Structure formats: C-alpha cells, structure tokens
Image (cartoon, rainbow, N blue to C red; front, side):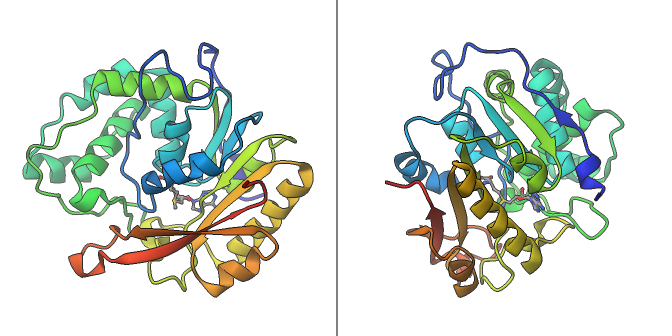
Length: 290
Ligand SMILES: C[S@@+](CC[C@H](N)C(=O)[O-])C[C@H]1O[C@@H](n2cnc3c(N)ncnc32)[C@H](O)[C@@H]1O
C-alpha cells in the first residue's frame, strides 16, 4: 500500500438542505486558482453531463472549478495534494476561523515572502496561508519545488482581495455535502456506484506542450495515465457516467479509444510568458454524453 492510500478520508457532514446546483440563493466560487483549472469548461461540461445522477465523484479536484459550478448535493472529491485537501477540510469545518486568520494577512511584497517562508503549525493557519499565497502569487500559479515548498513569486497585484467570509461560508456549505479523500485517484473512485457521475481531470501527459505536470512534486507518469484509463473503463462497466479531460495528443486518443471524443478550443493562460497565451485544443472523452 502506498503512503497516499493511508491518508485520511473525511466523511460528508450533515447538511442536506442542498439540492444539486442550489445553495439557498448563494453562489460558491472556487477558493483557489489552480493550474489546469477548468473554469473555462464549466458551461460546456454542464451541457454534456446527464440531468440525473446519484453521486458526483471527482478524484482530481484541484481548485474545484467544475465541482463548485455544479454544487452537487452528494459528492466524493479527492486530490493527491495533501495541503490542498487539508485546506478544504479546514474551510469546510471552520470557515469563520480560516477567515479570521486570512483577514490578518496583508497584501504586500514583504508580507507575501514572509508568509511564503513560514511553516504554520495548525491546519487552520495552513489553510489561510494556502488561500493567501494562491490569491497573490504570480498569475495565480500553484507550484512546488522538489522539497514540496511553494515557490511562486509575488504577483504584484496590490488591489487583489482575499475571499470574504461569505465566500468561505458558501464553499464550506458545498464541501459539507462531500466526502474528502487525500490521496491517489483510486482511493476516491473505489467509492463509485452505478449511476454516479465521475469527472476525471488528471495532470496532462508530459508530451503535451501545455503539460501541467511540474506544479507538484509528485509527477503523474505515463503509467499513471494508463492506470487511470483502465479505471475509467472499469467505471463505465460499473454503470457510471464517465467524463475525462485530457490534452489533444495521440497518446490520450489511444488510451480512450472507444469513448466519445469532444474537442474543446480555449486560450492557454498557464505559462508565465504572454507568448504562451495562445489557442489550444483539449479533449473530453465520455461514455455518457448525449
Ligand atoms: C488538472 S489538475 C485538476 C484541476 C481541477 N479540475 C480544477 O478545475 O481546478 C490535476 C490535479 O490532480 C492532482 N493529482 C496529481 N496526481 C494525482 C493522483 N495520483 N491522484 C489524485 N490526484 C492527483 C494534482 O494535485 C492536481 O490538483
């Protein structure tokens, strides 16, 4: 068993006033800007997803652009990034406490580098630190070095505001309907049942020009992509609605042969240099798209 598989799983908390997509008039926005974030894809995926499904399952949650857009009433979400999952766990259980810590942090270059070098001892302060850093980092990038240290420079946006208490409470309400899993995707997908909607958004293959694989010390290897494609086929067999995002590369088309393939056109915003802001295509593979 790998170390990741032994990490904690937090069950959903009692909060059943949510129907899919409704939060008593509130709107939950992603807390963290995340590399490979799928905000641009939210509307398209909504139109492809089935109207009815049991649970929503997303094992590569990242910034949660699709999860927070859907606001599902019952979900299981996970990610291999333990700091990220700890942050969601903290915001879910104590949005006021995280907000209190966040509101003490100032937006200046000196404070940013001081906070970046800090190593908070509590989960609540670590959550506030992660939200602070991803909000103010250059291009909103999340990236770690080999030692697992956040290493993105200050983004020079003195007017950028932190999420408000209302934002954190809305995010907390949506997360309360979800089981949170820190670890490998297989830890999350093993809970899938027939009728569930599964959205898989892994780091893209290294052959992609727009590969995001270097943003975390753990790389997603070719073997991991093969393992994921096998798991996607198992989920289809099980009776789930399965959707997979990937780069428009031959390796991905081969891995998901037999799935329906939808081409998505977008502008890349991941790279630091503006010369990399250009049109790219991505793929969505699906067994359930109409
Ligand atoms: C493309 S990003 C997901 C972005 C997300 N859909 C969003 O909209 O923000 C891929 C995510 O996979 C996570 N990851 C990398 N390897 C993983 C693994 N083996 N199992 C689960 N998650 C993994 C990364 O930490 C990252 O958050």
